[in-house]
Structures are given as structure tokens and as C-alpha cells.
Image (cartoon, rainbow, N blue to C red):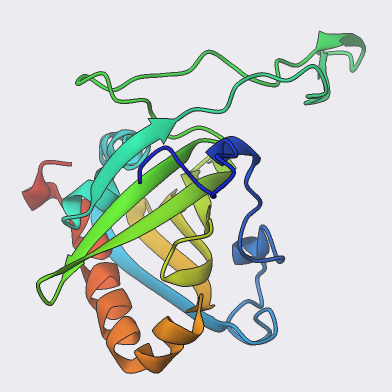
Length: 222
């Protein structure tokens, strides 16, 4: 059920991810050296060109636009709460002198419809429909990408997800002024039941990825 995670009703924010290689979608050699036992994947598509295209596509991406544009329902979104143990480093002035701590949890942003925007530590439940069936897929955002010319995030799987692994979604503005969406992932079936249906699981994954790549196209309103 949404909002519950185990028979002992542990809050979803405290449930560990269902894989160990957290953040491995950032590895440059992911396709050649994925975490042991996992299947790697990378796909990209051009979204157009120019700063405006990059900014519009990035904003939609961080409002769960890739998932929603792929026909996936994003529900039970729970932003991470602050903790007394959080530490995000220091803020430095122009001379390099530390002037104070960096906020570990900046103010949570919300979309026009009131939906919480993607933020680090956020959990959500994705609902995927395929072959007349509904698959529940709980996830947690494990890192954000906020660099000049690169905006995005990655989420990892929680117990109950059909797969175990991580998926990242990044919009890139390259030096030739082109704008791209890049999807990277590594995954494997989460249980013996889903291992039996591996060919079907791969079909569902491939179909979802194709939809991800189209979700931010200008024709989709991004």
C-alpha cells in the first residue's frame, strides 16, 4: 500500500535501497563495468538547441516530466525532512574564506499543480502499466545534478520495485548549443518471480526508455 513499506510500518524514508552501488550511474565506464550482476543501459535523444530549450526542458524534467510524459503515475511523493546530522559543507566568499555552513536542505520547490519537485532524498511511488497490468515501483532520489549545462537527478529502487538498481535522467546543453536528454541505468530483477519474467521485464524497460526520450520533446510541450 502507498505510504507503507514493511510489516513493521517503517517509514519509507528509513527503508534502505534494494541495491548497494548507489550513485554508480555517474560512472563514465558504466556500460563496460557495471555493478556485478546488473545490466547497464544508456540512451540519449536530441531535444533541440539553445539556452531557452535547455531551461524549459530542465524545468520539466525536475517536475517529474519524464516519468509523467512516459505515462507513469508519480504518487505519494515524500520530500526528505531535515536531520540534525545533515552536513553539506561550507559556503566560501570570493577570496576562498569560509563564511558559514551550506544549507543541507534548501527550501522545497513545488510545481504549478502543487506537486513537490524532485529533491535529494525524496521518495515516491511510480505506477507503471503494461500488458494490462499495474506494477508498483517505489523509488528514492539518490542524487541531483546541478552543473553549468547539466541538470538532472537519479533515483534508486526500494523494496517492492520489480527491479533492483538505479536510473538517471540528465538534460545536457553542449558546446555546439545542442540540447540532449540522457538516460542511464543499471538493473536486474528484484526477486525470483521477476527473474522468471525477465524477457517481459526487459520489454517493459525498453518501452519505458523510448517514452522517456520523447517526453521532453518540443512536441510534448516541454
